[in-house]
Length: 543
Image (tube, rainbow, N blue to C red; front, side, top):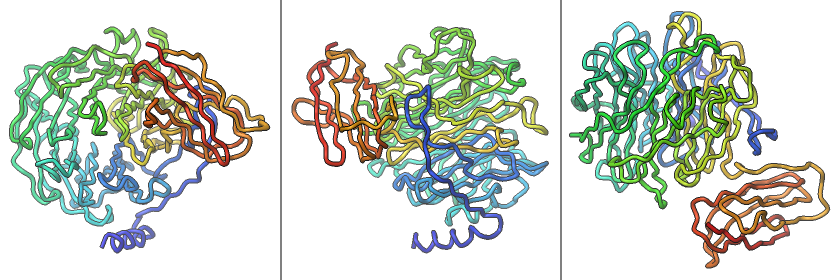
């Protein structure tokens, strides 16, 4: 049945503006990030402006992903429907979500794929204010009519589904948002039949300061958690603290803490970047890897003037190892120098299937102050240490989008993962108008640096240095011809600890920086295997 649906979608792709896009794979060596950067490309090039991208993956099949954006052309507004069914090799879709009434789509998209492969879209209204949803059973080719969740002014919603088969609420989908009317509370609703009907709306909190920017996630045992920013009462409504709510009964009731920790957000504009509008709203994710940090919650914000954030905007992380009861001290994610006058903003966070924490954001540390690139910061030890990578292969100059709210270029970017790849989406105007860009990031190549393109005369794995080490050591190796290369770390019992490299590499000399911050002191072995060659070296970790 699914194959029939897929074939029908690919047939429809040639008609009715349901476009079909493809990219060719190549790589270049970044001079900063020390890893192979996949090419950046627009997932759906068009004449529409595209901003505020979000991306989600199928809970069972990571080759199926659904990205969306706030799309507009003149006075017409909608939400993009951008889909891949083959792991990002090709994309098809439309700049228009065709759920009736077609002229009441006002952006703030919330895309979702549930356990049954049904696509859902949440959005705000255009001519009729409110929060609305649609669903699609044919990969976004057609959509149901709108379901009115709430009328009146509403903030962007966050929609998530319980995809854990062992959960008592497996398959239930939730939508949370903020009502733009005093006292500006958080609301939630849910559906158990794929968006055909939704439950009555439940008010989650009763704030004394206005709530803004809800983020919703589902935990490993079906817990529903929501966070939001409590803002000051006057424009630009600077983010003052983070609120948090948790439900263990399928969002029937919540325990609420209006202030789990203080922040100092950056709501307002960036004068050096054409007075674009920015925010310090939270982004959140949960480790669902089943590993040692399963269930840990991570929240990132953009802040300044509150240590360890500097006088310029920085990305700050807090984590909870007890499902929201207590929270860590503040951790600075971006690793450039503090107080260097450089700006990081619009973070998105994803905990991948191996438990790695990945945060993307705009950054101008390598550009003029009026420009930006996209960076990735990654931690494999629960946020204790971070490594920064450039993931964009070009720069752009942020500027407001003509005909929109003053200073608007979008309010967020997105990130997902699957099959050992990261899939970021962001908007930039390097093509002449704002479009959604992506880059297929191979997790297994993060940290590899090619030190020389000179072709060596043999395969070689060198002794790591320093050795003993704490906690970072460097591993050099040589590849005399293009080969399928695997490099792994084992303990003394032969248990696989981590796969560092698993990729076809061209001939050359390479170096990998291995961070063992999450390991205990002891003896470990690094092994290198290529076509017809294998070797190992003993490494000593002393903490």
